[in-house]
Length: 245
Image (cartoon, rainbow, N blue to C red; front, side, top):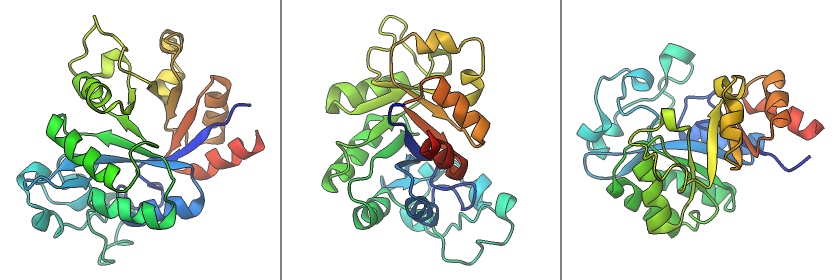
């Protein structure tokens, strides 16, 4: 069997608040090969990590990150009480910056690949994020993800970044003339992996990232369908099956 990379989704988000340093540190300690995170810019142009552009779901505050300064964002508590109750409340957990994550990775596992989801589809977001990643020597060994075709194109043409896009019907601003030209890899959700359209995207001939396989059954399906990388909210079943194979 070819080597399959194990990627923690938003860190180890089955057990810890997503996109927080505690989640990423737990993923590193668990032994994942890599992990994924999401980038937005604050009002004062600092890359911060959160899946949604709004802080309501994980922090309980209905504000958009782009309208908040970093100082204001640091006042948020991403304890994700809707999922975890009070378990992580008043534990000092903050919304991390990209730089803080880079410092964690550089200290704990400096050669770890990163899956970087660009959520704010501007060239400025890419430029700032790439500069920080290069500063820490983490750019070359990472993938960049986006559900936006011009962002994927910009990453490839400006920086020759390693890119992963998604099926055309999931992408914003997809150019059907250019197609998948700027993709190095393609990301397929489990719903697509299990569907009748899977062969359409497998036939593109690109390495496939499959997400999110949280059961042993799903992991085995991904392996059988040729995944190059598998993402999981809970990497434990994933790591178990990959090790067995």
